[in-house]
Length: 346
Image 1 (cartoon, rainbow, N blue to C red):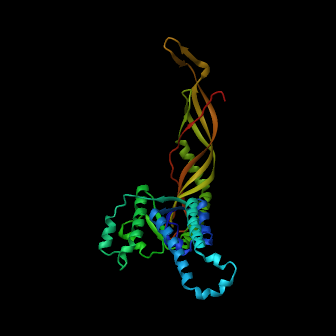
Image 2: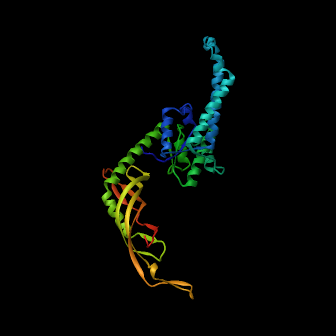
Image 3: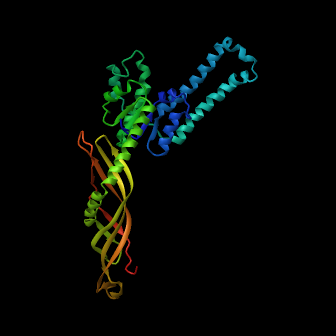
């Protein structure tokens, strides 16, 4: 399965499942993907508060567990540093350490903690009273934080006109997404592993698509020549205008994918172009200043050919028929408009 959205919201259960070990292999892979710009991680304010509460509660449970099983570790009491490791002040240190590791993760790798104060809850209340997931359980009242968190994500996606993915092992999430009619823009992954597998599959596909674009370079170059022939270039000064233009060369220097699906992709390609402009302009040596009219008049026009180099960012579309193997590659950007610096004495 390909990556469905680069905007990823993590649920509390993601951190619980990894025991808040941000140095674990999967978290390191996730953090590397974030650093490369492949993923953008978000949290809701509800998840932040719920996660920190879970850390505090889990440490307290661990402390009570040790207190209730003293006979099981009585032999360890003879060890020099045993009491130092399990006294109350140490548990407070452990709690602060785990909380700080979570806050460090947020600071370094979370793009934004969203807090939306105007989440519409009408749909949630309908789900509650109609006992739809996640409110179809005896403990349905306890599901409100998760449901509100999802409602925040939906509202964020709508306000930003963006897609998003939720990583959570809560089996009710897909049903709730469907109940809230968000299936067109909100997606679900069960685990970080599933998310990373999707990312890996997408990166592999991007490599294949990039290769296809390069293989179709000759066709794209010809399409780009056609676009250049209709381009609008605007020389600055000297009442100059372009009377002829020609693309001399173009190289694809970077490919960024805006959308990738199984049988379709949209990319923005950076073309490093060299092009010639034939420019007609007022001859600066034939300018007459009329002091009475306080206007300048030019009695001669000249032409000059000049070669420019510049980067152009154009969209390239890739598609293939269902069951087909060959990708069709087409330049879909069909208009270029740009100001150019022009000095007749150069």
